Length: 314
Ligand SMILES: NC(=O)c1ccc[n+]([C@@H]2O[C@H](COP(=O)([O-])OP(=O)(O)OC[C@H]3O[C@@H](n4cnc5c(N)ncnc54)[C@H](O)[C@@H]3O)[C@@H](O)[C@H]2O)c1
Image 1 (cartoon, helix red, strand yellow):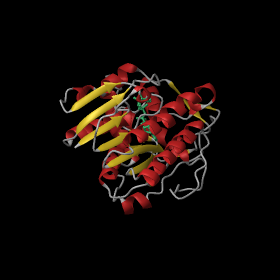
Image 2 (cartoon, rainbow, N blue to C red):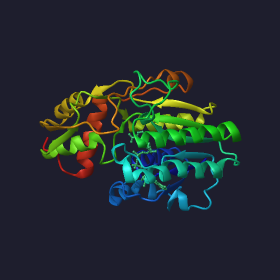
Image 3 (tube, rainbow, N blue to C red):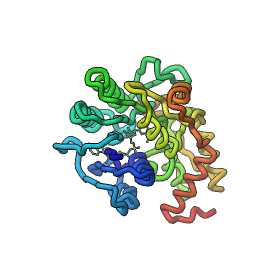
Image 4 (tube, helix red, strand yellow):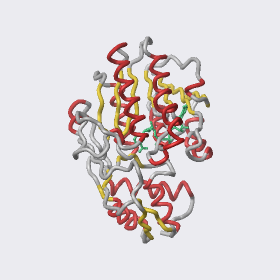
């Protein structure tokens, strides 16, 4: 089986790439190393994949590719991720990498006989809606990033509707685990707590998030690829929510260190709460979240200490 993974050098894309290679896929990886975080981190994300002869990597921007590889599956993860930077003059980066790049891929694959196009959408499409967040509710994103992810999700649907391209969109809820992006909260919190540095929490810390462990997300992507269902959207969440204050308590317990917290004003585009309703993905795709936050945080801190080689002082 052949698969294209866009954004293969990123956090989730590199975890998916490793999983596919371990499971006998020939993987075509595409990534242009955008500057949202360090090139070195993205390069290291690809280290194990690059040792595998079934991995063919192209360092290129989707918008500059003339011909994509002929594959059985397309896993589209490349995007400009992150809510807070999506305002103002940065917005064209989001429209280009999230909307236009998705449309370009869909155009290329619309007449080819692929088995599935899996699009990585986001809980950010919802905005401040009733909890738990259900796929059927009218999304009302509150950030330009959320708008760009929703626009691309609509494009994915219409290539199914009009061209019969077999697609599924997965709305991930705050993903964490090995290789998490350095701008994301769990990474920032763990780093600062281990180093004894001050942490900035936006808002009063009582906002809640449904955190999803990356291996669970990778499994959801793999299951979606094999399913008979098309044109649908599914939540992929951890299935519970925790406040940022309680998350910090968990990190303190595992690391054995105290957090020094500086509360700062809430940021534009941040929603109050997220919580995935998982009834649809559990019943239609038979996927279940397997990693609770306590286990996930423990695994993540172990990985972090090992990866950044700082010993953690434990
Ligand atoms: N991490 C999360 O919590 C989360 C939550 C919801 C949705 N998502 C979605 O999952 C996907 C992966 O997110 P991530 O956290 O791994 O982000 P990431 O930034 O680590 O990975 C994205 C990768 O895409 C690449 N890329 C961006 N634009 C490109 C282009 N035009 N051409 C080629 N490569 C390009 C980047 O260089 C990067 O390596 C994204 O689509 C994101 O919107 C992530």
